[in-house]
Length: 93
Image (cartoon, rainbow, N blue to C red; front, side):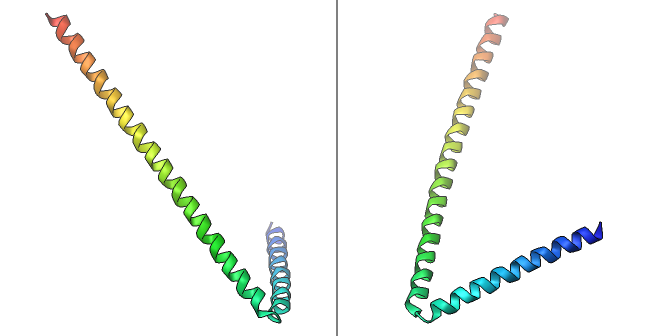
């Protein structure tokens, strides 16, 4: 059991090392041309900001929808209780 876990862990670590090495090589190639690195950073930042904006919009829409649903539930509940009260008072008479 432990061997399997260790092997799995070792494979993960190897993959991470390979990925890091590959990224490092790519960065070194692009470092020669410094502009591309700055452009990539700027593009990543813009993408991140765009994703954040989209998330916020979705969150707002969802909250608004939830609030509307809640108010609708409350309204229905109130109307039900009122109708019950009316029926009960009529029964008493």
